[in-house]
Image (tube, rainbow, N blue to C red; front, side, top):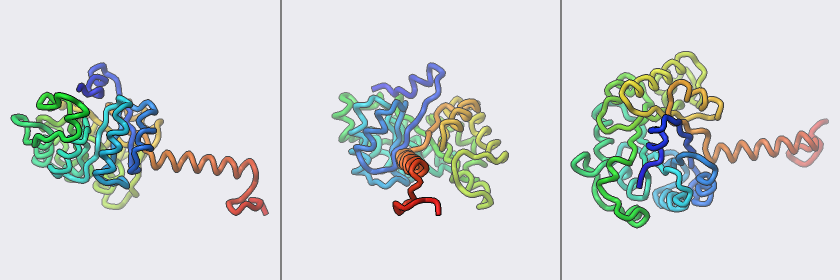
Length: 266
């Protein structure tokens, strides 16, 4: 099975990634049907466990989008199980050094390129013939989120077998600003914008992909202009909350009714 993200990037096109934090196959199926190039299941901070993620990957398979997962930590068991469940890319948090990046890459691929254990329990049925050829298809995306990761950025980006760096701006801000700035997406502070741009430049110099988690499509499009190859725009829980909030507000504005059903103006 070919990784469609790799084919998209080979054509010089950017990718749009969806994000699933709700542990439910129905919401995952809805997300996968909206036209994203890839959809990632957040096993780290999402309200879900491995069984939820497995069912979500199954539900999204028919969409044909590239399926990825953010694992809880740099842990071989979770990385290999996510791959065996059908993830074609792994986003690994808190990579702070070249040594950690090398460990991550080794867990992603079968020997001789790595030390991934063979046991594709689910993916072996979903993708007949699944084996060592997948070494060239799965994506290893390391998250840079700390001052240590920034200090070692060039060495991490030069790690053989690493396919890209995924920037989580909330933790990146916490990790580099020491609490001076609140966490959040779509950074506007000059020092954070400069850092986000620098990461893209380092990725390009090392021939790997730069990926950024964004809150709005406008910021995501701007990031593509900075050299990012993949941007995540919102996610299931945030999109649900935003749509519900907008609908409620519109109704209140049109009817003048407050949340208790009474007139909103006194």
